[in-house]
Image (cartoon, rainbow, N blue to C red; front, side, top):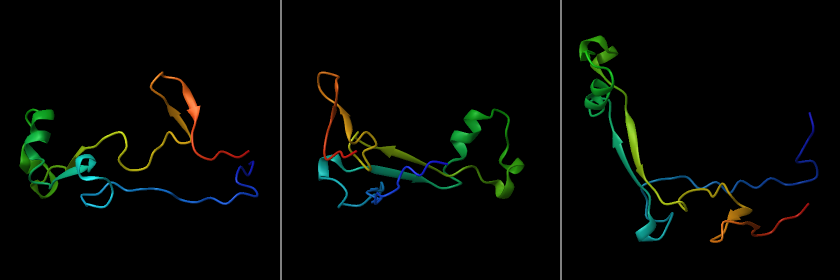
Length: 97
């Protein structure tokens, strides 16, 4: 296997999505609504007609999350190449080869 990081230092710049006030400015904050195993039942019942709670372990459905995010929440996966307003890709930031 080729070592692509040979002679390079890898720095993790990951930013997680959380319901907290320090990840983004207020109008751009991500919002995460959590559903527990009981709150998820109506959604599961709609997806599987005829399914009864008694058929599920502990009579519980799946838990889930609903996210409201902007393209700039969390880690930017397009760096260092980003799509510009004219839809052309341009190098952004520092790029060394």
